[in-house]
Image 1 (cartoon, rainbow, N blue to C red):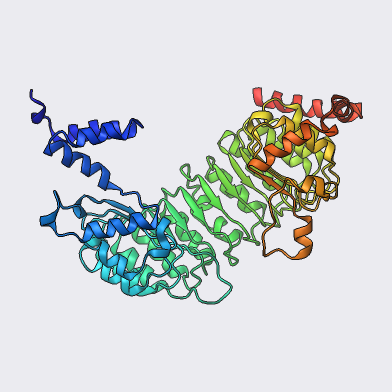
Image 2 (cartoon, rainbow, N blue to C red):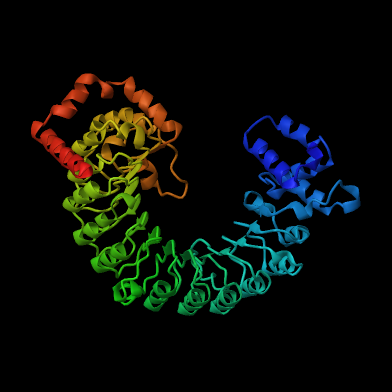
Length: 521
């Protein structure tokens, strides 16, 4: 069979493999120059998702799109399927969208942070049949759009599966442009919607959630951060969205236990095995009962965020322990009622935890850190304002050989009992450590060590700037070198830190052995 008889799909696949193999770009260029068919197939791959990282590239790209078809080898606009302008967001305006409107085959458009875009630009862009094949639109961090844009999306993008409208919280009361009116219409017209993010649009209420859950029952990801929803929304979500994988309702202050207890997860024991991410940050009114319901209905949650859920106690941690090997990420910041016993139990059951944040959990002490030190995959640990922690806890982190290749980020700010000696052993032991925070730790408020930390943020006041002590990236490597060549890393010093109190070290070994036994069983 002559090569010219090969199907174009096969040629595209061959070229795709070449492009992904990181081989010399000249090889791909030679293939593109072989014949017209190979050239066309090569251009399909190159223009499928153009890489626009610099303003100069964007300007050249615009000029190419404006060329008349008679002056080019092939029309480029129909080849473009995905466009991401987030890297050049400062240069994108309504006129830029006018240029892009010639790309009729687009299926993904990312305009993150393009803050100069207005309703006028989006409406004109979609009014030229661009929305026919669009599956995903990202308009995050564009605060000056309103219902007009969303209504245009609803009327022109019938196949839409993903929409991101999230914005960062604002101190001003200016995030009022998007309301229930447009989201209800969107839900009615785009029934294939699978992912929608609506963070910080405060005008959105239960009406929007009811429409989304009723008309789009195959929703996988739902982000309602800081929206004005009540327990009625939670009940609708758990009644209709049985395929939900990610739910974020943080900052929704009107939610409480009732929304979970009166939903199908309790009334009909509906299972949500596919739920992987649940964020309940600052939902102040929930208690242990909510956590118990959630962990029974969704036993495979991977990321659980309960930051600032101040009513949770050890009973909630015991419920979380049910998640076992599925739990990877846990945030319990400001859960001030939990104690060491519950975290020791958690560490024995959830042995695959990679990230755990226990900031401002004032009842936690050394036993918590000793238990967490046995986790073989632990990458990040947050212990900010856990003031009961001592050098004993830090040395426990260095007793496990696995932590030397797993721990990457440790947050110890405000842990005022720590000394330079113990931290030096920790830094030398944890070879992959790339972030260490020790702000407001008295032992590190000296110029010799602070010379290695990164500069404090400019918005900090004078007191915070003086106490700021954070090492990251190359600064950690420099600090490690300093410790290796200074008195802080001597063998005799390390021996004293390890064996100064035999009773405490025996206790560390006892807890560690107990945790290993649980893991084996």
